[in-house]
Image (tube, rainbow, N blue to C red):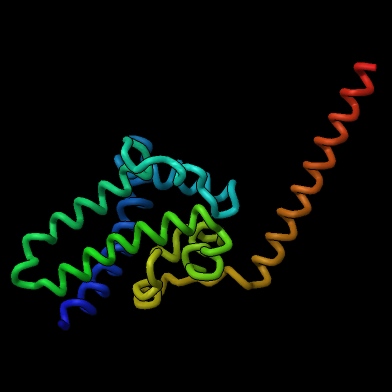
Length: 187
């Protein structure tokens, strides 16, 4: 039964390693298999205030969400041969992979849920340092490795949100004024 908590720690460690070194390290190169994460997912999350509309797509496709699901499926398959000898460990790994996908997808489809339930992941995408807060499911290894950087609820976040709201209001005013000007020109 000790296999279950060991699997949870092990999976969280691998989540940290894959996110830091594959998704952000190798993923910075546009030619990399992992580039979807940095070049697409992070761009959408920043523009959409943590959301990522691409999570509305099917996982069956050669795009970011499909590659994420494929990676998790392969990670699960790699551990299955250990199931006869270490059933609790494998069960913990399978749970971790399914839970990762579930909470990651939900956090980008429901940013308010993410702010409440996964503040460390919100901090990863919306904070000033997108190269910190590597864990998604639980922040254990960010604490262990010293890469947990809080942003949500800080003065900096409040200032950033106020600036974004002011910019959105100014953009809305400009858009409405442009509409009014266009209507005047037509008359």
